Image 1 (cartoon, rainbow, N blue to C red):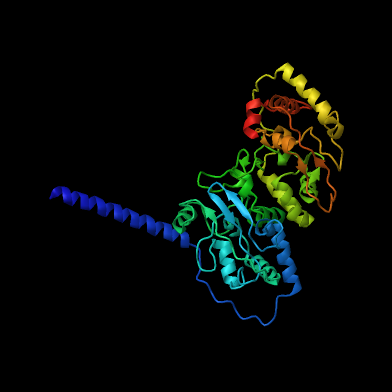
Image 2: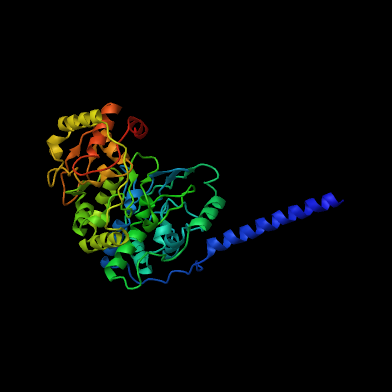
Length: 426
């Protein structure tokens, strides 16, 4: 009899613990949310100024980048977004019945601020509500006015293809309890920060959701903050890495003038760098359309987080003289005609490789991807006909030698690249 009593007590204790955990997860999922209020009646359609402001904010958030399928209607959804847990398909944002046609403005704000659909179900965090929770009421209403002004497109939302248990509401609730905090959050700014820095923090951490790519994620996909990030973050389903924007060992955003980075975000090309891969889409669809003052604010904020000093030197392994000679010859044969014998590049056409942060990143993946995959900088108003980078299908040993030579030339002092790293990157 005593054994039965002990088992009952153990079972009761487990049930009590589960009840407490359930209550905690429920509270964490509901905190900060206010009951939905009915939208007040409107006597007139939104004015053109409000719609234009919403269109600008949609550009700042690059909403069309995810919510437009290749070859599909703008904002009609259907694009698949790879995650470590499966594929998420972006929803239809047009005012059709299959999109946001049945939504209210209050439900739209709740989706931005708390990650819930119109029916209250939790949204997958591939939709970056963890960042959009910072969006102001005025900006949320402007976005809503713009989306309501779009032409309706009948396109049913495609169900996500997430693996179990990540496709369940219970798993999303636990994730949300672990990683989501509604509200403004900490931008890492002092109390006396200038209006420019506050604006930059709002755009970078809110609509721009920069840390979604440029900060490492936890095992369950929780995103860190830009100020705490160190090292590149690998993009799911891609060979590209998003470098840290604040780690001095990465791109060194604090060591170059604001104007250099503004030009890169505006045109996709600067003297010291060119954007390729996923960042080229961001520049083409988002940052090139932003006002100069907003780009300056974003860069100024990032520079406030990033140390201006160079990282402390590390003891690197010696470089093989044969490898260096081979890399020098490969550069002369394949690269110097565009990028120059001293890696100086050609302004407005080919970026310099000397002092280029992509060349010297601690992880050489982006450099190897640029050489083997090639690509184009984005076509922008400031660079409407970008020059392309052809792919070079070099043997593993040759590619390692070329990358090693680039990372040790013109004052560079980055670690050599091994053939094994080349194989893993490919």
